[in-house]
Image (cartoon, rainbow, N blue to C red; front, top):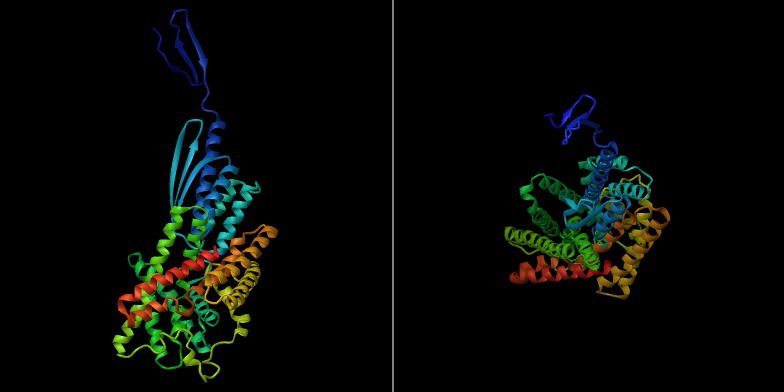
Length: 451
C-alpha cells in the first residue's frame, strides 16, 4: 500500500487511490503573499494607533477629545477597535469581524503638557487621516517624536520657572517690583525641587508639600523685613503648581459625559489643592514656632498697609504695566509647557492670551467677587479666537489657547486663595481645612466658568 502525504522537491504530493485504480498526484502552493502583506499592513496600522494614543497622552492632548481622535483615526485606517480612556491609562481592543477575535492593548502613560510636540503629533494625525502621508512613515516619525529630548535644557527650565513667578505677580497677586524680583529665585527653586524629586519616585508625592512649605517659610522671613508682601511672594512662588489645569480638564470631561475620568480628575484636584494649602500652613507654622513671632501681613492679601506711602519699588505695580507683564508671562508659560521661542504660534498665542485677560480684567470691575463669571468672559474670548485660528490655518487651536486659558486660572487664588488655609491654621487650627475646602470650591467655580 502506498504512503499518504509523500512530497517531492517541487512541492508535488502523491496520495493512494482508495479504489486501487492507481496513484493520483496534485500540487500545492504556500500561503499567498497577499495574505501575509495584508496581515502586516493591519499590524502597521494598529501600531500607528498605539503610538498616536501614547503621544496624545504624553504631550497633553485634550483628554475629552483623545477618544474621538482615536476613533476617527481608526475609521480612516479601516480598523475596528474600541477604546476606554482613563487618566494615565488607555485600553484599546482591536477586533476582527471575520474571525470574531480581538486583541486588547493596555497603554500606561503619565499625562504631561508639551505644546510643540503635541502640535507635531497633531499634524501627523491630520496628514494620515486625510491620506497625505503613509502610515509607516508617520509611525516612524511618531517614534522619533516620543523618544526626543525635552524642548529646553535643565538650566533653561529653571530660568523659565523663575520668570513665570515674577511676571504673574502684578496682575494676579498685587505684587510690587521687588516682590517680582524676589519671586524669581523662589520660582527657580520650585523647578529644581520638582526635577530632583521626579528622579526619586518614592518621594514624588511629597513634592507639593515640600516646595510650598519651603517657599512659605522663606516668604514669611522676607515679609519680616517690612519690604516684601507675604501674600504676593508666597502665592507667586508656587503659581506653576496650581491645579487649575486639572480642574479644567475634569470639568470638560464631565461636560462631555466622561464621568469616570472627569470625576477622578476633580477629586484628585481637590485633594491636590488641599495639599498645597497644607504645605503653606506647615511652612507658616514652622516660621512662627522657630522665630516666636507672627507673620507680618499674613491676612492682608493685597498688602494695602505695606503699600501706604511706599516708594515706587515697594508700591503695587500699576495696571498700565500689564501691557508688558501679561505678554511676558504668556511667553514664559508657553516655554514652560514646551513651546520653542522661534515657533510662529507664539504670536497668536500671546495675542489671544492678552485679549482674554483684558476681557477678564474689565468684566471683573462689573462682576466683583465672581471669578467664575469673569473667567467665563475671558475664556470665551480666547476660545473663539482659537477656533478662528484653527479654522483658517488648519493647525491645532488647543496649542495656541492653552497659555491664555491657564492665565485665567490664578484668579482662583485672588483675595487670599490658598493662603486663607495657611493663615487660618495659625489662628484657628482645626478650621484651616474648612477654609481649604472653600478654596477648592472657588477653584472649581473658576474651572466651570472656563469649561
